[in-house]
Image (cartoon, rainbow, N blue to C red; front, side, top):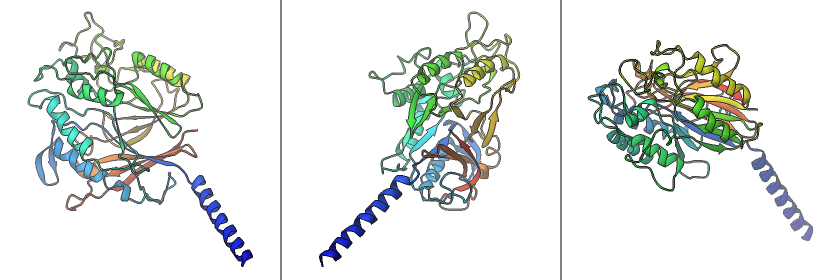
Length: 386
């Protein structure tokens, strides 16, 4: 009898050890949903059979689709947690243009922020691996900033810093909350970092120009050089010439040369804006040197020019290789703006144990006749963060 009890106890201990070992060896997967360019205030020409559809309605539909992601089974690819159930979402990242620029007849930034707050802060029902509400992480876009500081075309009101103030307060948690009246874009930049399962994530204001890189350098000086770093920003790695500060004294925002003064760095290549998407080689070279000095920066995520794309940024002289993930917009997608079945956001899955990251395209509007949103996985890319 005694030997039988002893055997039972030994078997129980063995089972406990096996379960513990399995739990210890199980990969720690962090799931992040990534989107950008909500553009509240705009209207889509067509969406799900309706015309002139508000950003509020379209973003709400996307949020409804996002809420179904934990139920999904991942494709049987070679990525993180392949063929496994998503199960949880730990973070939702949105990299700006929450509001659309307030050119007539677009609504105010305050009205757009109220709609965003309802959809993203109140209607997201996602839970992390501990059953707690997923964390929302934000970065500002060029439209948010222009609304706060002014633009070279008329806006109504002339300025409204509501979205910038709320992004700043929510992400930086200052002791004294900013107000629309106290906001000063020169010093109130939305720069912060988060450590996520051994990966250091930088969230910066618009683009890593020379001024932003001062903050980034200081931040990264506290991080071991072996720690992988991800950068989340609004603009693509090339930035846009119009986003730089007017190089002509008194350096103001004027209609004559169309500089928007969104990044602190003065444009160096001419006194007028060159063709969109080109003419930032001089400015990019400073950014490339920064990347060369910090090889642990492993990936860059952005919106602004919106479609789903996984590509490698090489710089103007092709002397760097940075994995880049461009995300679609629910309102202004280059392709989804024409074909709504291409509307997408991204699921970022991070395996902390192997330092592997997979980004999967999530198509959320492929069949407008379905009564319940159904997310379908599209393209994917897996990279090593080692």
